Image (cartoon, rainbow, N blue to C red):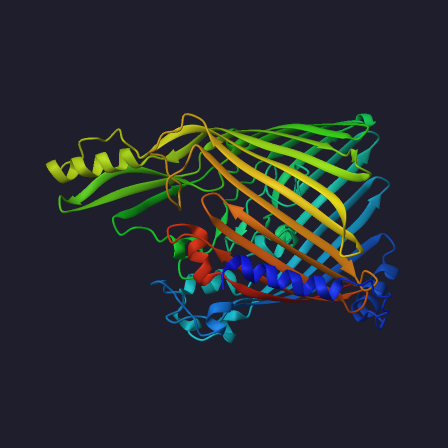
Length: 510
C-alpha cells in the first residue's frame, strides 16, 4: 500500500469516528495521590513554595519489526533487529520559591530511566558508552536540569541561572529557537510536544526591559555556558552516527570547543519585539557557536592506495540574524493567523566535496600531502525561513477543527554544486518543505485527535497521527503512528525502513 493511501485510510477512519458531536463524557475524577500526599503538605508547610511535577512513560515500537518485515540494510543496532526503539520513564519536578516581592528561585529536576536496554533483545551488544549515557541521567548537569533566580523590578526583568530561552513564535518548527543545544537521541523525533524536554538548558543571564509596557520589549542574552548538541553514540538506535557512520578513511584527531571561562568565547544575543494591534514583530541578533562541530581536514596520511584523512572537529562562530512577523486578520468571516520567521546564518562552514577529492587524489598520485591548504570546508551564508497559516474549520458538520499550513525553505548564498551536508548528500541552492496538519478536541474536550503530512524536497514524506485521552484531570493516555517514505539515498528513505513506529505514552501530572 502506498504511503498516501495509508494516511488517507487512517484519516477517513478517524474522521468517521469523530464526525458526530458526542456529549461531554465525565471521567472518573479520583484524588490525585502525589498532589495529596506530597505537594499539598509541602506547600502548606512552606507557603511561598510552588511545586508541580509529572511522571511520563513512553514506549515506541518499530512497525516493520512487529510485522516481521525488518530491513536493516546493514545497520547493526544491537546485533539483531530491535522491536522497541524507546521505553523512556521520566520523572520531572518543577519548583519555585518566592523569596520576596518580585523575586523568586525556580528550577526543575529530571530523572530518567531508559528501559529498552532491559526489554529488547540484544541490549548487551550496544556500546557501553551508549548505555552509560542513555540508560540513566547519570551526570549532575543532566538531572539538575534547571535552576534560576528571577527578579522583577518595574519594567525590568532579570533571570540568571540554568534555564531555557526560546526566541520566535512558530510552534511547529525550530527556526529562531536555536539558543539551546538539542538532545538528539532520535534525530527524526521532531514532535513539538517533546521540544521542552529535548532542549538542553544552559547557564546564562537574561535581561528584559519594557520601555513602553507590552508594546516594546528589549531582551539581552549573556551565555558563558557552551554545550554542543547531544548526539547519541554509534550503535544507539536511530542515531545519526549509526545511520551515517564515519568513513573508515577518516580519523578524528580532536574536538575543539569553546572555553566557558573565557569571555571572548561567550555567546551574546539581542531581541527586540514590537506589538501594534494585530501585528507582533521581532528582530534578533545572536553571536553564537555552531552546536555541531565542523570537520577540518588537517593532514592526509597512510599509503597511496589507502589514504587516511586526519580530521580536527571544531565548533565555529556564527552570526545569526533572526526576524518574525505575526499577523491575525479576519478573512471571509474566519480568523486567521499568519506567521513569518527567518534566520540568516552568516559565515557558516559547509563541506566541499571538490576540496576533499582533490587533496585525496593528489596524495594518491604523489604519496605526499601536497595540498595542505585544502581543509575540505568553505564559508557560506544560509537563510532559513518559514511561513505558517492557522485557522479554524468545519469538517463533516463538526466544529473546532484547527488547520495549520506551513512552508519551509532554505537558500544558500554563493552556492556551487560541490557543497554537501554533514550527514547527507549535496546541498541544493533552494531547499523546500511543506506540511499540513489538523487537530480536533472531542468528547467534551477530554480527547484530542491530530494528524498531518510533511513533504520534504525531492519527493520524501513523513506523517504523524495521534490520539490522546484525559482519563482524569491528571492522567492522560496517548498513541501515535509515525511513518516515513523517501528515496534510498535520503534520510527519509532510510527511516522508511527503520523509523516507522507506534508511539504509546502514559502521562501523570501533579
